[in-house]
Image (cartoon, rainbow, N blue to C red; front, side, top):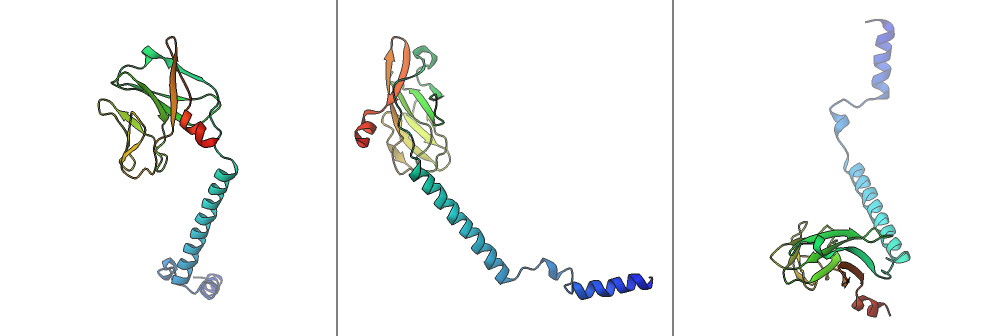
Length: 173
């Protein structure tokens, strides 16, 4: 080893006195700082999401919207749709009783996508095993805190249309 290399090694050890095995250890203080920083970031992020929801509420559905033809949804079948100008997913269900029902396709617990179980009369959320009554949208079990938001379904000749539910309009007024 040359003199120059020897000096580099000595200087290197003075500048970085920590051995390789100790370099992977994290002190409690550093770990606590990291946790505080992450927790603070999550708190600020949650606050921003809540403020956005408060400042920019979801726009109410206006008017009637065409979904499909009656024969396109078989008895016990469903059709997913999004209303023009919106990003909210909806589900149209042709119940075994012959009725058509339309609901938001997002669970009221954590917004997971829900689906209809044909023949059971149940709309199911697979994320946390939530279930809703397909005829009313009411919660049957699991963690969802409230019923699925629904739309009124009506027909013009052979076409299926939806509009804002009458109950929701009366709540707004």
